[in-house]
Length: 172
Image 1 (tube, rainbow, N blue to C red):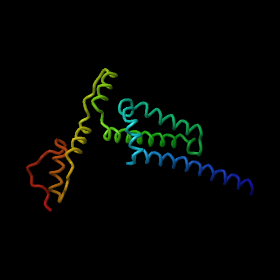
Image 2: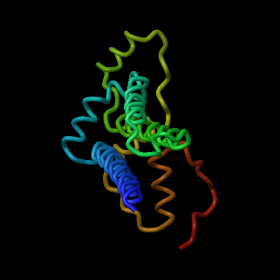
Image 3: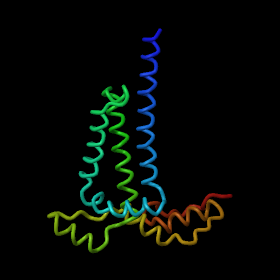
Image 4: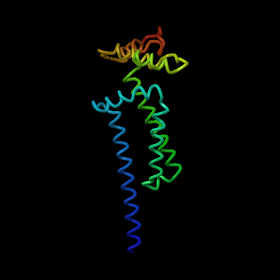
């Protein structure tokens, strides 16, 4: 009976440690993506690295995942399928953080000149990002009263994404 108790409590301890570790990662990630002033300052600080050399961000997160796998606080950290699942989740999280940071802190002319000096090829600007930034600037007083106004507002904010039609707009 004593051995059963030891096995059960050790499994519960491993599960508790894993839940705390995963919970801390989730809370830290949510805080970093949130609207608080310190989180915004951190995103602003790491924005050039995320924008200009995303491989560094993916390598840092991959290294943290390898440390977690080496530590192995839970049985899931030793199962290849769970490791791949966590790797995919972390890659998705870094990608979403990169997108949010790129929209929140677009490259300035100084950043663009600095990046241009360090790279031999130039990429054309991303059309969707440019449209989104321009639409944010035009969107100050958006008051939408019905579906007809919604279509017109969308066409004004995102020109070229939705072709204008000669048909009558949706009836209310």
